[in-house]
Image (cartoon, rainbow, N blue to C red; front, side):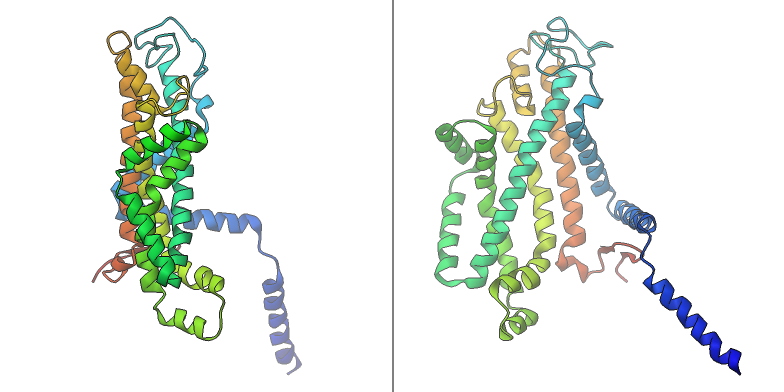
Length: 328
């Protein structure tokens, strides 16, 4: 009788001790890696084109982050004789003063991606804040914001960018500011339409009824519902930002002439097209195309999976053991 009374106590003690034991960081890290790997594999099976786009983004990101691992030359210094053709030392040849074209192309990835990613993150984040505040309060504030959006949208994006850079000059900051302004109004309009529908949901009305502050409602109840849209806009707009930055550099309104950015490399390659190897304009041009292609594929796949309007049709992807869901 005594043993039967003691046994549950010992079992309870062991369970309590196990519950109080701090989690093993290594085990948690392995669990996270397994869950992430499973999510990526399911994403690749559901959206193979999106996974291919993600692979292109990963390759370009690695080249942009660690260009020194893939070349031994300096992008600004002479590496050999001018106008060398493709050879074992210079994989894509050399330009008019003997700089390695392969080196300048992969270092150009850093410049182009840095400007594009930073400008898009700032633009979409600012648009999210402006759209949430404008749509939530409505009235005169919303009307003024929408009239400002209409005014900016009346000017073609590239023309607006040319005007801003002509007035303010070309530098890293002004190029980023220009791209932010170009993409800001469309992002505001897209996000505002979602906020207008979310703010009428019952849980938002309940939060407002119990006296929740406006910042709390925006951050806790509205923003989580448009997070998917935020991520989708980021992935889709970066490709367009790469085109804008490359176009500005091609037209001579980018960074300094010697700075290796993809648009400037294409421009210089066309100038020397009768003397330089064919790879000088083609290599950065192909890099631009692959980057834009990758972001568009990945963004489209992300939109198909994360768009709430598609969840009802059974299209979705859950991280962890949930797996993919399909209609029927």
